[in-house]
Image (cartoon, rainbow, N blue to C red; front, side, top):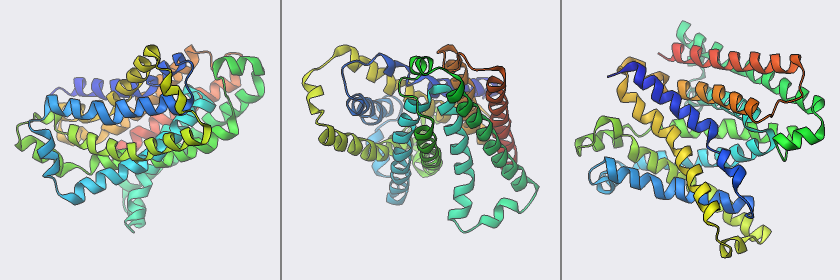
Length: 340
């Protein structure tokens, strides 16, 4: 075990989550649904089994020997996440990386904390003791952070000249962005539910000879395949609606490589969560998702600033952005501490 290395792996996962859509800025000549389908096909269908093949002996039989209920649960949560992932892409499209990911990650953390006990009919557990109240305080804090970041985004809309907004975020639309951010934040929590629900499959992978470091890879594969059912289906529906199947008749090696890079970078964030957990003591593994989400917010804010998404805004707007980011990161720490 190496706790510092484990934390670094979690943080690198957050860096991948904050930057995976950057290559999309270089895709030219393809409709949105075309490059999105290529990315999800490579990132969700092709890459996971390749990784499993390299890390888990006889991975397919190991996966198929897991209890059906576990596979269905992981895939179902993957489908839930798929809805959030579609909205996630639109959220970044309308709000940009810095603003969009801060709001989306904050909502995902809040939803991921509140939904399980409420869905299980145990809402009272949210206030049963000091630990639960700490978690609830962290959730409330994340919502406060979202308000600050949202106010900064609204002020940005009013302060920046239209030309500058379009330079930084070509399709900037605050109202559409907020709607998609809410959907993205709530439904994206399905990813964490799916990853945490495959313990039995991880145990089978270890028994088959996989190192604990890689035992979570089959779980990721099942969750992502569930997500592809939703995302791939949406892309096909958009192709029929917009008559964009012709894009595939104009193959572009540049676009294909960029989409492949998007898929690999995106996958790395969840590999970071599952691969980093065995590096830290068992009583610290609960913080993996929180560290990844917090680092995603931090890095996405930095990327947004570098890309000029906040260029031309006043001190007050930037101060609200910084305050919201700090509150969101502190809230993740509180949620993690209370969860322990």
